[in-house]
Length: 167
Image (cartoon, helix red, strand yellow):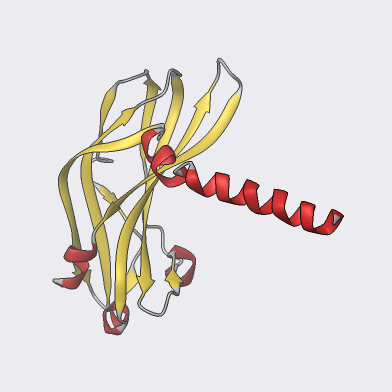
């Protein structure tokens, strides 16, 4: 009886977690969001592709971030469910420098461009041969908040599957 009660309580807890709309809640509570895309696309560089982005992001929090270092990476989800991340295609070259913003205030929108756009690392051209289900760009906002003595990384994503498929 004790085991059945434990299983019932665990099951109810798990169901309640799923029914709260965790994904939609996290979407609504993103600290930083990409609000405008000025330039977004892949370009062929030798035997690789590179993704370049210029746009704007907003600080949706109540915090002032003294430093925000924004980088991006491209992630490919294959039709078989495998996920290819930057770790899988890391070229080892000095690429993908980020954008640095100082004193980013609450509800403030800033241009993200790193003097010509944020670039991904080089993605091998043969990845185009894989059957891809979805391609996303993941933006990492590494923050330093002096007032609250915290360092956090917040993320936002944009779907670039159509751009990848048209290469």
